[in-house]
Length: 527
Image (cartoon, rainbow, N blue to C red; front, side, top):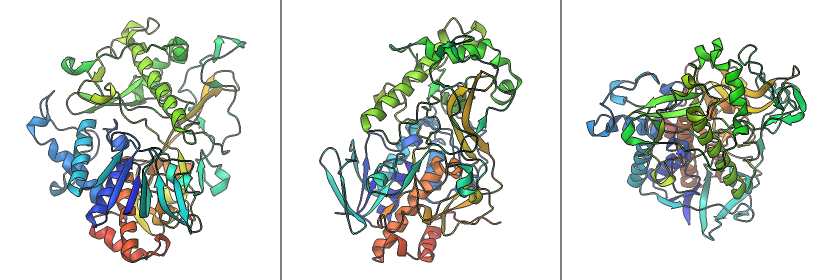
């Protein structure tokens, strides 16, 4: 019997485990895979946070440790030590942080923090989603793994990207985008993108101009509804590749064995239609299909860049509710798409030589993800299930039009979402649905009430990742530093509820608030 059991070794799960252990609780951190940290260690080294002043507590400590790591000359193997610019303004000298780092360094720092806290970590343990969750009187008693292992605890935290424990416990949730009408929002539901003039006219048919020949792969016949209407579609996933041009540390990305150039026909047609000469593409996307954000030691965090890039648009919708085998296949398909994309950009004759040239030097970093073929260990699950609690965070809170009750952390990044699908426009050309990027006027509070289920559904579960928020608001919340903050905060709440012998719903907010502030959490922002 543990005090607290955490399912999901994401950055939120790791911080929750460390906080619970520091508060004297017996804790088990369960991770379905081998590696801890989720996207924080899985390739997302160019860290998005919005305003770094909103990040406190263990997350601030983590990024300070990263900064300390890179003060050592020995940390710079493949290039001379330098200041990494372009991400976030520095914090005061006694709180220096660094928000740009290699995946292996992220894992090293998190593992060290866990080791210091003496947290029990159970790896390669997958929740039995059919019958593994045992409930009694509105509380989880134990959770069983597919391996047969059973974990009993007083409190549980679902820190997974998918919300599997939450769902298996019978907690209400949603997948997809709410209609604008549901919460009186303005940027939810089906979205009219791209903006006029930012995408060339691309024929969507197998044989150009011939609808009878069928559509190209991943292109739908229509939007499937009106703008602003809700659906169950999920924004695109990808892998954040760690690439390098350093010859001694570079591994070429070979042509996938299952390569089918039809999958890249939209890329060829984009280029042949002049897409890379488009003023919007050159000015806003720097004329590149890949977004290579620089990391130390000559490496990159390579992300999606524009309309046709590393996002495998239209192929993530099945993932949130899928069984483990199907999720694995979806992840493999994303990997094959990206490997094929890089190979195509570097080698395919339909890519003009002057365009192939900039991509040619890049390859996977030999000293990253060593036990996974140098490929990132975590698919970027930007959004999956989202809990529906008594309190739902909407865009009105994110935009500062409504105050958040009982905040335990701050959000500050823009409301950001990626495309959901390609479809044929009424004019007969390729276009896409989904995606947004709306800056916020100032940081906003994230309510404790959005991280606990409805009282009548579960009284000893906290959910710091799949929080109760609309698709619009979740676009700001879904950043790794915020997940760290929320992970620490819910662990504090769980520990205090145990100490005071209270349910999570009866824990006085002033008690929680006092402890959060004493641990350096940032939970208020002046109007």
